[in-house]
Amino acid sequence: MVLDGDSITDFWQQAGAGVWQKHFGAIKTADFAIAGDGVQSVLWRLRNGELKGQDPKLIMLLIGTNNFNQNPQDVANGIKLLLNEYETQCPDAHILLLGIFPRVGATDWIAKVNPILATYDDGKRVTYLDIGPKFLQPDGTFSKENMPDTVHPSPKGYEIWPKPSSPLSTSISRQSPHQQMHQHRCLHLRNSPFRASHGGWRG
Image (cartoon, rainbow, N blue to C red; front, side, top):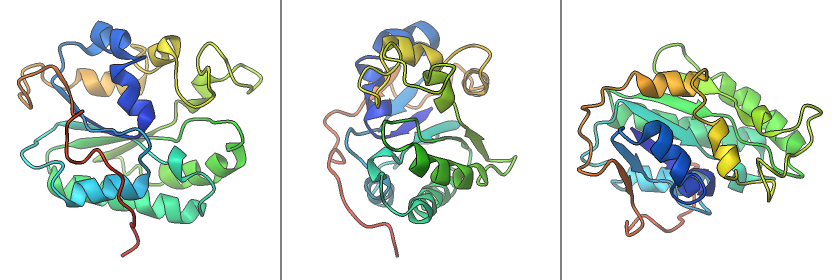
C-alpha cells in the first residue's frame, strides 16, 4: 500500500504510529506524504519518479488542505490529475481518495471541493470516502480530543481512521499480507529527495 498527501498522512509516523502498528502493522506500506505539501507538490513528485519501482495494490490519497482558499474547481482539477497519474503509473492499484478533512475557517471551501472529489468515484478503480465528519462533535463543532489544533488528528483521532467497520479498513484488509513492496513494514521516506515542495499543476 502507498500513502500520499500532506502532514495529516505524514504524521501517521508520529501521532498515529501506535495506532498504525496496532491495526496495520503487518501490511507492507510506503508513506510518501510530506508535511506542507499541496496538490501541485504531489503532482511534481509523481511526475518526477516518486513511484518508480512501486507496484501497490492500494493507494490512499488525502490532499488539499494546504490549498485552502484557492479556487475549489482548480484544486479538484489538480487532484484529478493526481488520480490520472496513479492510474497510469500503477495499473494494478485501487485508489482510495479521501475527502479533505475539516479545519477551522475552511468549512465553506471544503464543502465546495469535496462534492467535486466525490464525482471521481467511478465504482471501479477509484473509491471516494469522506470520514471528515467523524472527527467532529455531533453538533458539527471541532473535538479537541480528536483534532487538538483543528487540522491534525491526535492519537485518538487517528483511531477513527482504521475502525474495522469503515470502508477504508475493509479496502486495506483485502490486500494480500504477502505483497512485497519494501523490505520494511512501514517505510517512511524521511530522506527522500522528494521532501520539498514544487509548484504548478496547470499544464
